[in-house]
Image 1 (cartoon, rainbow, N blue to C red):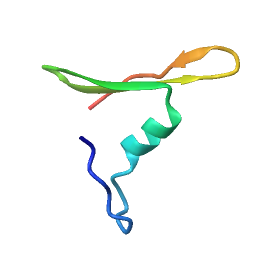
Image 2 (image 1 turned 180 degrees about the vertical axis):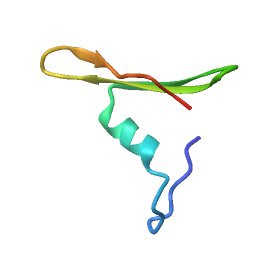
Image 3 (image 1 turned 90 degrees about the vertical axis):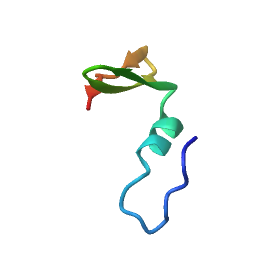
Image 4 (image 1 turned 60 degrees about the vertical axis):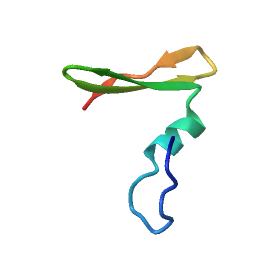
Length: 54
């Protein structure tokens, strides 16, 4: 469950933006770290994001 961010905070809104703008999103965890991904549909075709591993 996502927690609410403090309106005065300078961080903590990333996943809320992803949820609002992406058509699909998720997280994959493996021994090397965590990968967050999202899909955004365009007028041309769905586009799969570049995966960023943390």
